[in-house]
Amino acid sequence: MEGTMMGFIAPVFGLGAKGNSVAGTGKRGGFGLSVNMTVAANTSSVASESEKEEWASLNAMYSLTSEQKYKAMTLPAAENPFSAKYIAFNESDTSEYSLDKVVYRAKNGGLLDVQHDMDALAQHSPAEWKELFDRRSGRTVWPFGSGVWSKKEWVLPGIPNEDVVSMFEGNSNLFWADRFGKEIGMTDLWVKQCGNSHTGSFKDLGMTVLVSQVNHIIKKQGGIEAVGCASTGDTSAALAAYCAAAGIPSIVFLPADKISLAQLVQPIANGSIVVSLDTDFDGCMKLIQEVVEEYPIYLANSMNSLRLEGQKTVSIEIAQQFDWEVPDWIVVPGGNLGNVYAFYKGFKMMKDLGLTTRMPRLVVAQAHNANPLYTAYKNGWDFQPMVAERTLASAIQIGDPVSVHRAIRALKACNGVVGEATEEELMDVGARADRTGMFNCPHTGVALAVLEKLRNDGTIGANDRTVVVSTAHGLKFTDSKIAYHERKLHQAKGNYANNVIRIPAQSDRVIDELRKRVEL
Ligand SMILES: Cc1ncc(COP(=O)(O)O)c(C=O)c1O
Ligand SMILES: N[C@@H](CCOP(=O)(O)O)C(=O)O
Image (cartoon, rainbow, N blue to C red; front, side, top):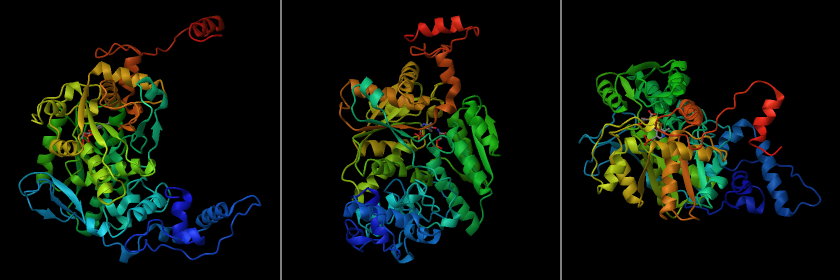
């Protein structure tokens, strides 16, 4: 029953013999969320007893008041002893800090990580966590309907619900890539559509957490005047939107002429302070770090480990979508390299708390023109920063990724792989996949190209369950997609181009053209 409507609603409302027992009861006997109420079951003469029970449970949910729904989604204070803090990423450094402190680096200058009180979380059984997450996701009770905040206790347990800044992000669909999978000899290929989100990229998952915490700190103690980031276009869009929703000033540093028009307009529209700089992303990243050291501006890039707490929920969501089974492979395009570590953290946390039993193998896909991690992978993990060259996958045009050591740790821990794709490969495979119903951004093209190579060389098996992470919406990158189809790119010939037919509005001419393409 686990994972079905009955499986998560019945325990909440304590209905019937089956409904009264919490599946896989944990050490503390469930979350204690039963709501006392009488239900009129929808009984048809042909319904079995278990069907009647199921209908009764559903009816119970529909007739709850808002207050009852909120109660059913919230852990009572006594069952909510969870906490998290910053620790140094490098384990030899013992510094630790409250999440309310404005701090991005440990004493030794290395990055931070968010550490949860795993003993407190382990007080509840895997089945209870699954049931709680399933019950909340995609509904409307604040803030638990969000894919991120449905996992609040694992993300930012201490924040009051009223301080959360959310657009009910997450809960993105898994696209079953049946046709494209068959084209490349795979039977179980899925694309996680993280671009189907408020600002059109996976950055919303982390930004809701970061801006919520800023909102909380401002309310509690002040000291933050604005939030700032360097960006190749997606982080800036997410920051601008969440700050606008919270009424907090935002500042974005963008490399001049290196992001798409659709990305540029997002922070402009949301009222951000938009600064265009004559440098690349790495130059912007250096500058924003200097500025936040000196001024009361909070850093919103994924160097700030709060971001990764939100991004890690996508792993949990993927497992949840597969009824808590872990895929064999996750393929993710990599730039500043925070996301691959976030994926690792999510899968590791689920395994450590017993919700799942294994880790997937992670693949980072890089553009050949911006491939410092790929080069390190080929050289026994000896990392050297580079000056990234222009790539149509402009959001990952990064030569000195801030989270490179996080990424290497994640990849080593799960026997991961790094691959690369040329400009032509990433555009061609993106176009081929689009013809099977997707609408890919070039970064997803990089991931698909690397996937195909790993399938061709046998690293990924024909029946391996594989999830490609689509990190942004294709509509953010229409310039390069149109240029590809018009064969105007110098980086790619347009082998799968689909030209618009421009002809006079005369029926004979129209029919002639159509006959060349379909049987009429
Ligand atoms: C669309 C898109 N895909 C992939 C990435 C890479 O993510 P990460 O920097 O976490 O490696 C980024 C940003 O860097 C991005 O904007
Ligand atoms: N692609 C990113 C680059 C910055 O990454 P971040 O995750 O460190 O903020 C962007 O869109 O700016």
